[in-house]
Length: 276
Length: 259
Image (cartoon, rainbow over all chains, first blue to last red; front, top):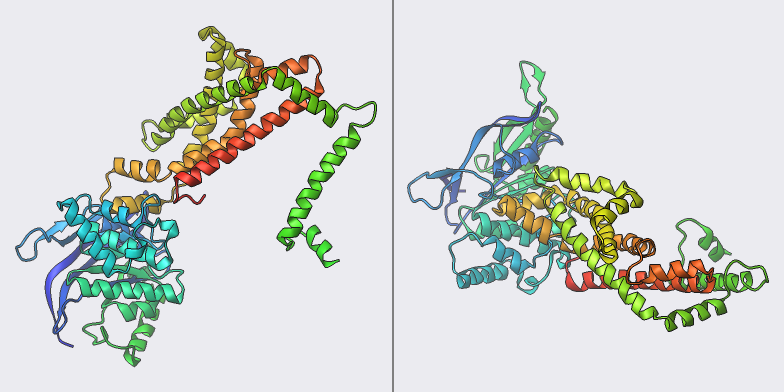
């Protein structure tokens, strides 16, 4: 499949997070660029972060979104307000949307009120906001649920509301912590559909998600990062860092049906995880 | 036999019809015990007829006015206690003010009498004194409940608000104040029993414009057992009605509430 790399979307430089004396993650570096597929209207970027429990996956996600201030390092994302090539800005709280595994919403706001609130800091007029919300509700199949509170929504409706709320607020970047955790088959399909929608709506949508499900990561992501304890000078350290990166596009695995090559990658990832 | 086993077994599976039957059997048993216990010559508990006479007597002596006096005292005290508690609980996430709220919660272990001594020196009017005693004590309990609500808010809700570009003040407003408004009603409901119990005691200690507490005290003086039980029943029923009303109000006002 023919594709090409374009603008840098996210640039992570030397991130480390330490709570008091406990070092959680260290030396996290990565760059992800916009990838354009020939013959496709838009191609969103799906990046999976996998690793064993306690290796700092959630901390890394919170550091990426600015919800946790990194002890060292910086995160930059593409600045869509500027026109020059590779215009970037340093991430601050709210620039990257964050969806947790419970799909948390404001319990006292209906779907419509929540989406309106998400748009409160934009320069759009009231009518433009209403139009934008209506368009999103329509695209994401939430029109019938617009006046419902979170406790009245189904699991799928809740997921979609949480995603579009973050899309409206943060524009292109979304980080999802364990979006498939504890979901039944039906709900997993709903999240997959949401990924498809994100893929079709914008070229710049960048979704970084953590998961324990290696098969799902291989199926959905174009890039997989393994976070684990590194081995330095023969000794296993007790802080998390990126120990491997797999670019499924270069391996001719991305956007293709599951094959023997995918299964081989699965085994390789398991080995890497067990060693870290 | 299997049915009998189920109603005696912990966590036994009992149909709704049987549960209702068990409930009414207990009520019938209590009434029966009351009639039997009060039928002998030497009884300490008044007969149902004595209680009925007590009701009639109380009504003739302005029971309704006394009920309204107690309710007014209850509502005024709760209103002020809510204002102060809300201020303390909502300022609790602010580091500088946190110790004040925390300290107030500890005051709920203070005894009644010591406080009344100091209040007597500061407040002359008996009604004002009743209000102040209730406000002070209710505030300690309500603040404890409301700070508990704030403490129990999951970190995800704060992160969610922050990820939507909420400033720290917006987080406080959206997540803690607006997002937990229904819990305020629940805190009031849970503390109402304490409030109602305190109110009757305060009315009995500090005599002012009457009230149910004063009626109990007077009945006690003359050893009128029928009246005392009648009053207890009235106080219980009003307390339960208030509990029902606040719960109804919470559900009606907050559709999103699922406590």
